[in-house]
Image (cartoon, rainbow, N blue to C red; front, side, top):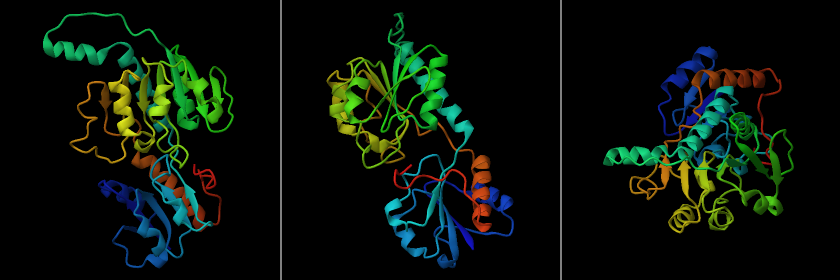
Length: 306
């Protein structure tokens, strides 16, 4: 049995070194350099090409190199294949810190003052008053962000596909309660998993239901946003600003209008970066569990897609 690494658009030298150190004696290959794909039962994947899966007749486990699994073409995998993901407590802390930082940066007008500095303008203004944050997606990351915000005296509401209840935040669920959730927000944070029902959910219809002073923060997936609808909302005062860390195509295209829009802050998918050491510990654990017919850690519900 061999382990295949198919993690695209990055240098995997350190990842491969760490995996080989934690799994001595195991044949570890990097796609597309694998001498016999019939021997592969375990794949570490991130944005793997769809054509890969049909070439793996003995595949048993696909491990995502991250907290999300949307880059894995689940519909192309046999039903018996288990899908697992990375769960890293550092990721939750990093995500919570990122969201809090960007909310405070907007609230305290830091971008505005940076631009004033470039022009030699001295013009103080009071901070933005609103402190009501709505979080779409109440999984592990969403709950961590909610906790950090409530610890810093923000009012937090949450929305999810199914009913959930947590102390200190108001919760909403389903399409029927989405409008009520959106109606009084100062900031909207997207932390939804990417599924067929959430793709394109950040669109003109949703933006029109938000207060015009609301700020969007998307740290989930770029495919949640209809880019032209976001530009429309910002240009037509349906939305005050947006902070985007994720994009449909990464790196963001050089000519993309997001780069130069005055009310958009772009960051390079850095809100919560996977630790190679932590990831490899979990990958090695799951590989050895498969070898020993034991339960794997952090498997997903394939029916839900997360």
